[in-house]
Image 1 (cartoon, one colour):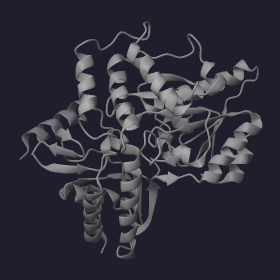
Image 2 (tube, rainbow, N blue to C red; image 1 turned 180 degrees about the vertical axis):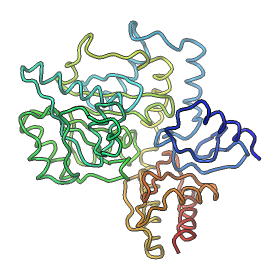
Image 3 (spheres, rainbow, N blue to C red; image 1 turned 60 degrees about the horizontal axis):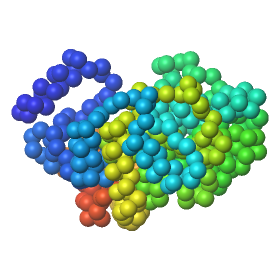
Image 4 (cartoon, rainbow, N blue to C red; image 1 turned 90 degrees about the vertical axis):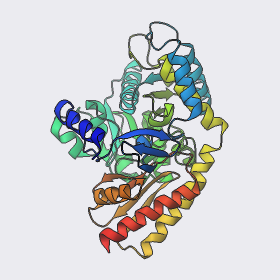
Length: 401
């Protein structure tokens, strides 16, 4: 019996709110794409902390940055200047919108919340109060009341109704519905270029262009939620880049600091000056430790070949997953881009698939009852990708044939 796991399970049951359906494992160590549990078993990690550990576990540069900063100074608040915050802002702005401004937060929900506040205040500053935000069905933008209201998944916000008024939802890739919804009362359109939590749905480039055109027509702000799809995951630094469409505000989080809680929203042009002193704030956002971890992560991504590797290995993995469809009828679709992939099943066995893959030493994620998702580190090799695909194939054969 794994005594550590059993002790942790008891403590969790007694003292932690039971909001998660945890898998029966406790990890104690990680390196690169691998993790080891409390019994010493090794796993290939295709979950990546839900898209967070873009450089893999315990990347040397990030670990060194964290340890060095922790020995000097961890926290002071934004009452004072923070050198690493200013340096990180420069790096992000120059890669995203030269001449823009950014605000640092702690999570994707906070980044999206800030972006929505910015949109409302922009219109108020123009003398016309607007509160309507057009969102997409299936979208996920966070779990605060406002971002939950923007989330196009009623099951997630129903227990906390009534939601914040002003949020309307249209089907993804429906240009006519989008154009009709965006009117002169619209403050913003918020969308994920690749919807992650609904099962990895890629928005059409024509739809992204339609969103840009609709916002331009009425003076609304276009917000790109790149919390999960950014930082190189889809084979470009931002998923939006493939379409040639430029958003007004971009939100990022997850992979920004390779596991240390970090987030930001960046606004271009005049939008970067909308929020002024007292309009928005955070105690922890943009702190020393976070920003040093983020600088190390961002430097590695910008200076290395991680983004191109995500494109290359992701394409190979996508092809391997699609090849399974001939022999495994339970696979109805393979979706995604780069190393943000999902396998759609024709039955609700995704959780069983996750458990079977764990038995084979591979970690995958059941993002919904019928969808298995993969969000591995960008350092994943093609051989590792094939190992994961083999385990998934075996699990599906055992469960569905």
